[in-house]
Image 1 (cartoon, helix red, strand yellow):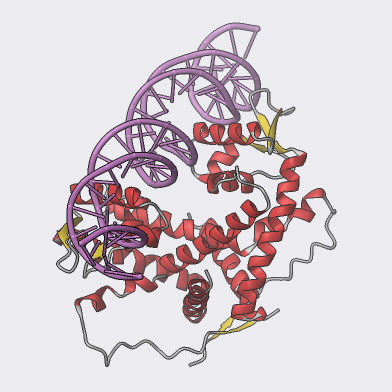
Image 2: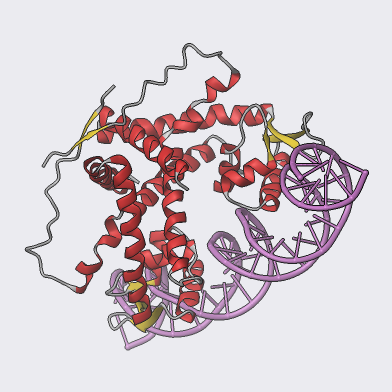
Length: 170
Length: 170
DNA sequence: AAACGATAGTAAAGTAACTTGACTATTTTG
DNA sequence: CAAAATAGTCAAGTTACTTTACTATCGTTT
């Protein structure tokens, strides 16, 4: 499979004709890949959270979402959540406790290890996932409309490819 | 100008042959654009912070970087930093105070407005920007090596294009 | 089988990065 | 010029963490 992405048809930003200023030497600050990723990611997060609030999920924060995203339907150990989010076990414990109190998650003893317990979704938690997908789909449709369907899908694949490399080379 | 990005040559993930499970209905969780952006962005942030620490910048946090990124060389008002980061003026004030105490930023009265002051870079702050670029360049080179130069540059342009749309449609 | 180090998790206290509410000093608007 | 808006501060509270110290279970070694 080969997906071809045509980049936006902008004129190259050579900056040669305009008045040179001190800022030019630091123009990279505004266009480096980390910043672009950050800004776009933040836009997505904002839109998603706004949608969730409009659906009545007013008790869900960014941190909550990151914990929920680290929890798989089959159940996930606290330690694995902590590792995945790169936070301490205590921090993960507190966030999970909060989401258990709010009714989205629950904890059951791990049958294969007496020390561990598995964090799982409650019915409410699974319903949250279903509802969250509505917002995600809407945002993706919006992005796809802006970029074009094929460019958007290619963006997804390139990010996935990049992610595989980053995970293989920590 | 037209840049063509060839997506990674992966087999399409149809998931048709493997054992269907409850997880399949929620597989979108792992591949939606928000998550991919988040994970890649976090990788970038981690590598950048690691590099900065190795250069001796042990007093710079993620939040510090976001404030520094919101400050322009010509000087930026506190209010604008707050708006840009979508945090309260008080939070921005505290973060700026911290970076002033650490010697990266300074505040000068705004000649055009008696209420306002401009946040600017000290020499140490400008040196930080120069040093930070080293890490950014290194990470970008790494990403480009993984993706291919043209795909990487196209990724940058697509993100920039997307960002323009998100900013135009808040 | 007892001892030992590693692992899963908790408890409690402290810190970083915020928010909210109340306020002052300027500036802009009508 | 009065009124409303804006730029910023002060103080107190909250969220999302970290650090230090600890218990319980597990796997391994001898």
